[in-house]
Amino acid sequence: TAAASNKAPVVLKMARNAEPGIFIPWLIDDNTALFTMANVYDGLTARDWSTPGQFKIIPKLAESYTQQADPKTWRFKLRQGVKFSNGEDFTAESVKYTFEQYVNLQPAYVYVSLWAAGWPPAVEIENAQSVLIKTPKPQPSLPRLITRFGMLPVQAAQVGGEIERLAHRQ
Image (cartoon, rainbow, N blue to C red; front, side, top):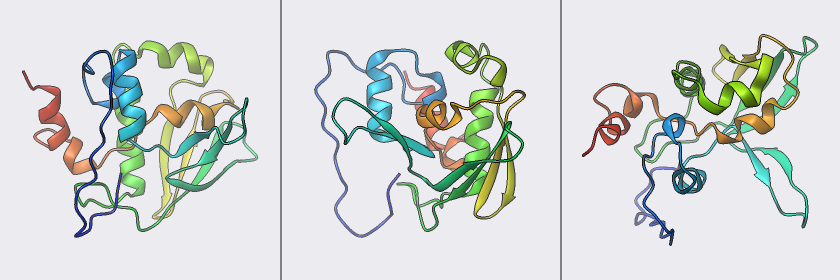
């Protein structure tokens, strides 16, 4: 994601040993695409590697996050004023829509095994600035697991949108 502005576009140049198979985050099934996705899409959380030899999970598109008294529920306060590269605002609807794409994936591939009894997560829009992410069973690793969930602009991702057209390119 990036703020829309009058600046010249930023170009990402990468040298990889193969072309990524697809750029739609929940459909990625190869290492090259996963590496590319990590440099194109932002998630609610990210891995911080600034301390040599270890990493920690930090808020990215979330301003903050906390596990609630109910251990199956996490509250994510969303960063305000963020726009996707196509100009759409990053909203609670973006979070809900993105999570639904992962949850509705058939088969759910690696997510079911990584999340175990915590799959599938459900997003409840609490208000314009926060969402609740609920899991069937407690999932203490949720902030780490969602680092791979690249947030999407709803209009661009829906049928006929920019991202949907990329999925069907030949």
